[in-house]
Image (tube, rainbow, N blue to C red; front, side, top):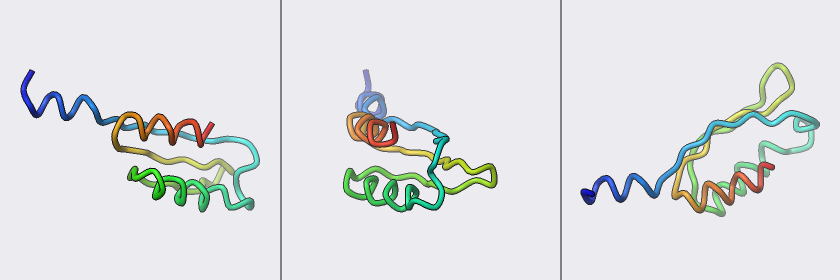
Length: 71
C-alpha cells in the first residue's frame, strides 16, 4: 500500500440528520463545540423541517467519537 493510501484509510467522512427535539435547545451550538474539542471539521445546520443535519470529517477514531456525541 502506498503512503497516500495508508493515510487516506485513517480518515472518515459521515453525513447525518438528527430528528427529535433539536431546534431551540442549542443542539447545533453544542455540536459545533464538541467538533472543535475533538478536532474534526465539517458543517451543521438547522433544517426547515425541524431537524439538524451536517457532515463530519477527520481521523476515523475522532469521527467515531463525534458519532457517539450525536447519538
